[in-house]
Length: 469
Image (cartoon, rainbow, N blue to C red; front, side, top):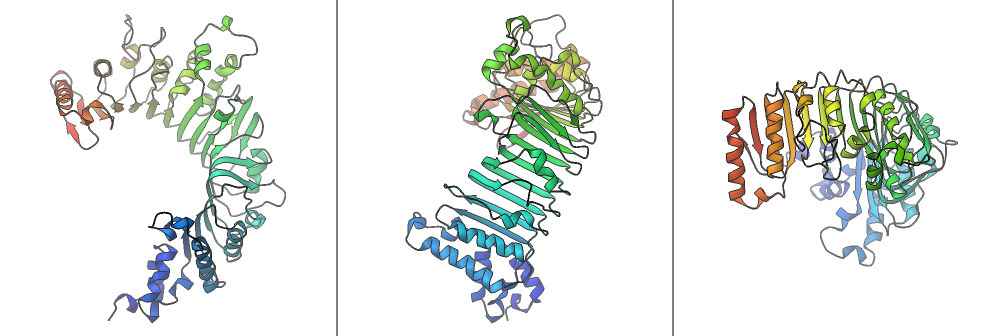
């Protein structure tokens, strides 16, 4: 006797909900009891690439995409008007736009709460207007490699139950400002917009309900610095922001913020001007106003976990004298780059008086005449002063490239962090030790000497394993 077939229908529905719809449909051959179970599965997952798997060039075969569309039609027809919780659709050029929109409208009529769309049409595609007036949608996700025309404006748009909106697109097209968009989602908690482009250069992101915000601007395409960017998000807990650095941040209201990741993008030419005396810059140079980035830092100063990109560190070198004190920061992450300097790192360390964990991704950075005392690149009498004042207990070094310069900097950290108890060193996956066992043994021996010289527990991680010295 088939034990699975003897299970209650509700249990078998639950089992099928973990399968793709194609796999669930195939269970109909098991027995009569399984024949029509797919009609009651509340979660549907359609993927044209999986439907065509595994034969190469099968997509170009005549009639194959038609069979995929017919399959989706049959499943939806078989289910009739039964309630549906989740609908996931992945498809590419060749599937008819009208068929896609009819599927979306049908699941909306059946009260879908979780909608995940990955639609990669090379030609212009418009989502159905019915999508923007759903009273049941709670989670809505778009993903496309091409431009997605998805919102035509606030009129006729209202999603009263929507809590999570995630958009990942090669370009997001909105006809209105984002401040006109957000009121259409009165209970929104999670907003993710990847590869978006602002409608104009004055932006305000305002929401009383959003707790998690991820914005990744595609401003690098035009390299236009926004005039102003404001955030009025008093309930925000998690903030991830990547954008061309703005000339001003007039309002940043994030009193509840717990975690922040900031990437303020600058070009190499702007970095050169950042390092020049102010008198060498023209009055209309946007770089003159980059010091306003300190307003963004003031607005997030209650954060407990802070991650800063190498470009951000370079911009903050203009704000060292006005940098706020981050009394709540317990974990600080720094991403380094060979073309970006560490001028602002000493003041950041000094202004995080309760820092416990420091994470540095890449030790190699651009050496400047204002490199700061956090490194040992340039001899100075006050070398290591900012480290001696820092109470960090755990240091993680990622992307260790196994060079003598990096080894000297590691020793500099061990010498000057007075409270350091643990150091974790993660080697690059493609570094020299990954190919040469002799180099690895040499570096392992050098790191092993730290055990006799320092009380800190040093651990070395290779891509395959780790070594506690």
